[in-house]
Length: 217
Image (cartoon, rainbow, N blue to C red; front, top):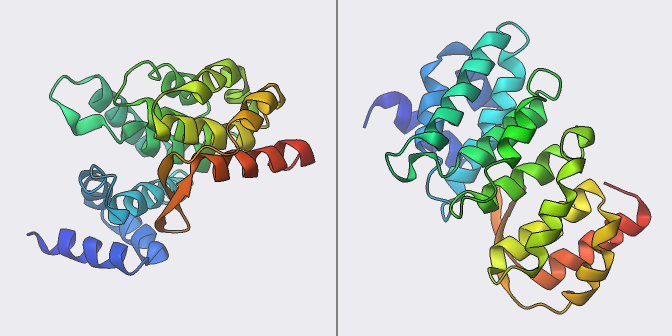
């Protein structure tokens, strides 16, 4: 294993996000290696890598916005590429990039949303919508009907992410559906604060209801 990749893995394990952001600024290969570590969504390192990419691009954009656009372009190419699962985490990463670059990359939000009909990408699209929403709501609010449509999905993860995204972007139209799934015991492995935590769809829906009713996102 290349020394840089070994270092990145160790830093991800230790949640050394600030150090990784600094490394991304110092060595452009860091972002590529972080992308390569983002594929296994059962591994918390993959989610941490996605989060770090977003944070790093926010810093890179200050001096080299074109580099950030190039990273985003590469990820979009990976989604469209027919080489298998290489781009399956790209929607989540793009969501982190837009979240951390709300002005520079706002035009990417509807492109991310457009991939929701791809089965392997849908959960990532819902995740991206929820991550972008509190920072740049106008770019994803139009997707409210799309989010709502997944509240009745047979897939636990899609229901959970749709419930969460409803709360994050304040979809008042989702209130009745969210009420209907408050006791849903479907399981979602949900990444937050550097860890993958088990949550039920009902727990997520209940939290979303509180957010929507309080107007707090």
